[in-house]
Image 1 (cartoon, rainbow, N blue to C red):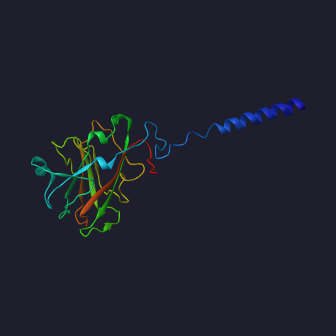
Image 2: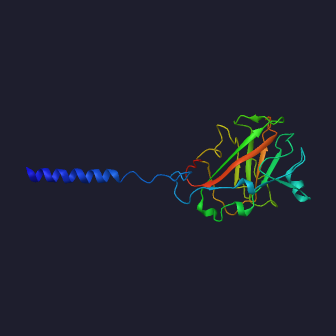
Image 3: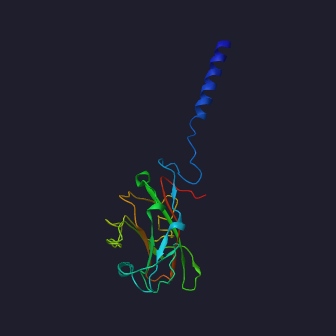
Length: 208
């Protein structure tokens, strides 16, 4: 009986050790989310600038002339018509050095009306595109990504949108993008758009 008691005790100890080793590794603070790969890369928005466009003008003709930019990620001139442009430049020193380390992308922004009051986040406020080459097609297809626009997402900030959520969207970048382009939706009251975060990551991203 004593031998049986010793055997049972050993089995119990082994079982406890086995249970303790199945918990996995906690995701690092600030993101990771169990997706593996490199930790999240949060873009320093202080390095970004926004193209200054006259109310009602489009980005293409402005880029072809002598244009100016201002620090920050918000348009100075209000958008006065649907599909107005807010173009934000992405210098290479603000971006990851190796895009192959990241499989997902999260972006957030805020909206304001002509009087400067913030508009509640929701569907049908704006769309956002990411642009590889500003000398190429900066708008891409009407729906979905294109050869020069690897990201084109609708309903940013809304229930139906994905890009602003922790999980973000899955993207395979072929090169470093040069800019992001926001446009207000038809029928919205959005006059100003401000990008508030841009994160390259793997798995879910959890802000601190």
